Image (cartoon, rainbow, N blue to C red; front, side):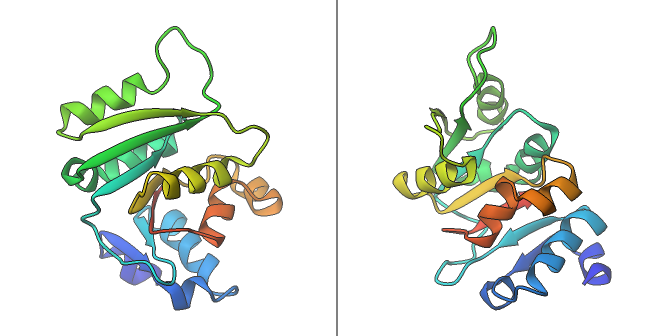
Length: 173
């Protein structure tokens, strides 16, 4: 997988591989860590497309999220609607999400920012539910914001959402 992924722009993980508990996570991890390439996870019943109409971006102002947005720029610029979701955003001197919204707008994306309260729910669950509520066709997010070992042991947004994606998931690290 590594050798093939190195010579491609995108690794696509379909339902059969995603549901293989032994091989699926290895392919996703390998695609992200061993090659640095982006990965598109497509769950059962979802349509694999790089031309979604509505895209939800999971944004947390970290390097991984920034790279995912940059890697998905063609997809985001062509979408009819891009919603940038921030779960429990920290109060700063600027409006949360304004920076990434401006970046995407300069590149032709039609963007809105959705600050979301987690109300004690896991971030991944909040993002997945918001994607469903807004009729998103794809989620774009950075992968593995925590240390890799910690994420493997304790879960995390990437692990949870990759295990139970409600719709196609575009990941970059």
